[in-house]
Length: 125
Image (cartoon, rainbow, N blue to C red; front, top):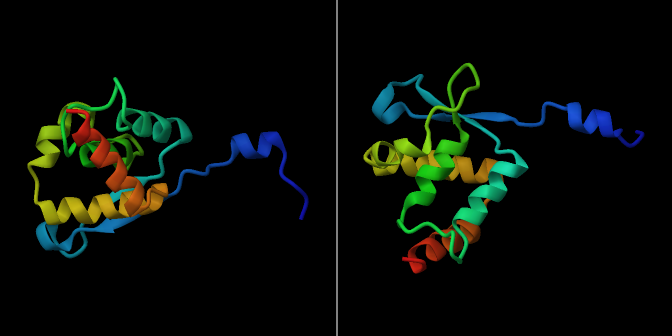
């Protein structure tokens, strides 16, 4: 197989989606649709939650931020904005954890990555 070209790379639809089943609270066929983050979105998320002047001042915001970056409607549009963080975080913790775990797996965030980003956000307070 030959190497791909620049055009093939840039034109590829390489942002897969995955369905996270949510039968507990929303019914047997219910699911949340997640879309892979772009490299730019992931870099912004990492920058926001890293140690330094721009690190978030609110603990626990990583979960809301990753959901805002990855949860999409059927039409492909993002479901949440950063302004929805409080509303999102007010939902069932078990349901949120299920969605966040799948989002992190899709985006390639390991448990160690998430723990470090959350630790950094709390340390910056």
